[in-house]
Length: 217
Ligand SMILES: *Cc1c(COP(=O)(O)O)cnc(C)c1O
Image 1 (cartoon, rainbow, N blue to C red):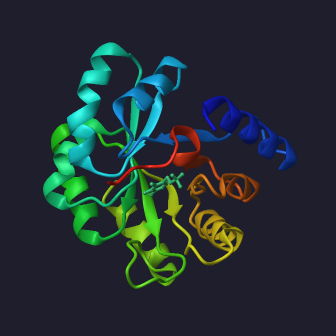
Image 2 (tube, rainbow, N blue to C red):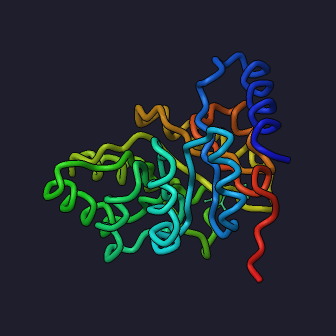
């Protein structure tokens, strides 16, 4: 599919939703993708990328950062507290803040390092037992706790259950963000980013529609 087609579809979805073009940040999710595909997207001028794992990102991005300037990395996958320092050195945003222990670790490190990435609280909107994220009923309290730690919470993030209509989850996330005075909404992937834009997404995370299918083999 490719970058330019995704951009065109984003523009169309923004227009249909009466939103300003440029209101929505495209995070190109490069996890597991071969280097040549990532380089091709960099060569087209794109600079904002998402990775799932700190270790994988640390293995590949320093070399790209020597060749291309202005790269911005978002961590969209789970974060362990023992990787928090490395994550905070490498990523400009973390979308997976989902428990007190990691919030406290980030707050401690932010004090020490004098900076902190933009943070998104991940919400388990479908209340799926196997999925990460704060439960909907705990979001307000958790956001308040993060703010009490002086953490720069920019918004909420969700990954809807695969078998459900994502729009319902996007709308729920938007409602929880508004209620908490948060403007950032990290939602929408390859299969549903237009619907996420319709519901107010500010950050969409698109992988396979840009790079092609991931090969985990
Ligand atoms: C892999 C991943 C994506 C991208 O998924 P695609 O379906 O390839 O667009 C988005 N968000 C998260 C959290 C992911 O892990």
